[in-house]
Length: 113
Length: 111
Image 1 (tube, rainbow over the protein chains, first blue to last red):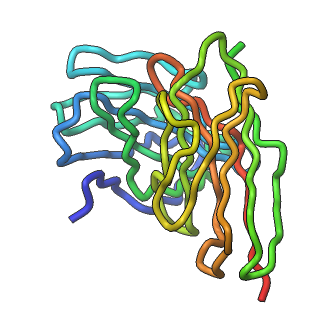
Image 2: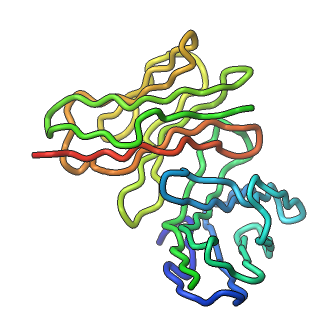
């Protein structure tokens, strides 16, 4: 089984709908992240969480919210989806120091029509 | 502002040829540095990392990277490329709370 699992893997939805992307991990890491990947732009940080009670905005948090339900679960929500949120979304986890690499899920490809 | 730059958007190499992917960083101090690879439909896989010490770092799949403080660079190399190396490659630096990624270099391998 994958260490970092994202569901769904693909989703097509309409403008204005509320969407939730889920991430769960079995690595026992405290830190979890949500990134967005767009062609030619690399990965950009949406939100990050260092533990269940610690949630922080990243560089592109507008239009998104998150919930850290447990150490192992970190969900990303789009409250009212818009077409420019069409992207590939990645969840990642890491240990508690910066020299520990991040471990990524396989991504959720989201299309908003 | 802290940044990671990958100057080459696309690179094409012949199978068996050597490869070098460039990465430059702009940070006040030497950050923790990483190279990741993304195959189509997959997540990002760590190739190698640099924190301190020996400036030549060995990674998985035959990759290595050299840290050069004077050039603020962390270039990825492979002596002989295989067709399976075709993928997107990302350089990243730890920003203090998350990874700051370059925009990626897409590698195409020709027969």
